Figure 1: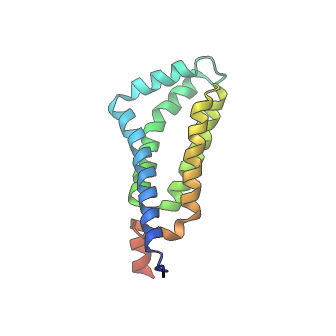
Figure 2: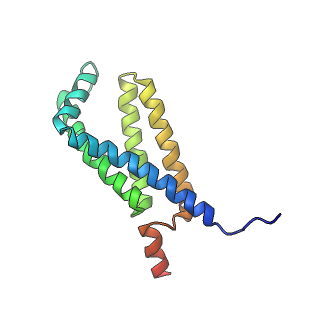
Figure 3: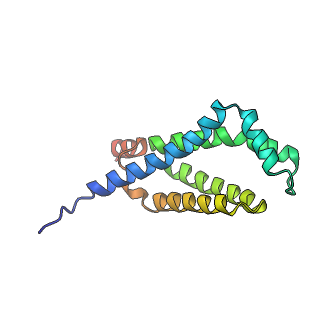
Length: 142
């Protein structure tokens, strides 16, 4: 039995995983914006009330997080500036994990570690990022 040696399946798998991760992050941001930014900020304020972080820092972060998630998610979904978006997403997970650990929310920290793993795998396998804006751009230039 002969297997097709082209990397077509790898490119499809990469595109699907990248789009899934992008959709997930995009919808985190969009749903928080649609629910009203004040609702999300209020939730974070309660969650971090007994942490050493200042109230204004928590509010500022809570206000900035939804658009940041939305932007990074959209970039990943489209496959535009993929390398930058994956690095930004990984750094975002690091910040979120710090906060989750600070309030001892180990379930959230574990979930964030899973996201970081997906982002790392996508960064490592970025050579398969053909079905994307970046892939189209590179094909035209090369």
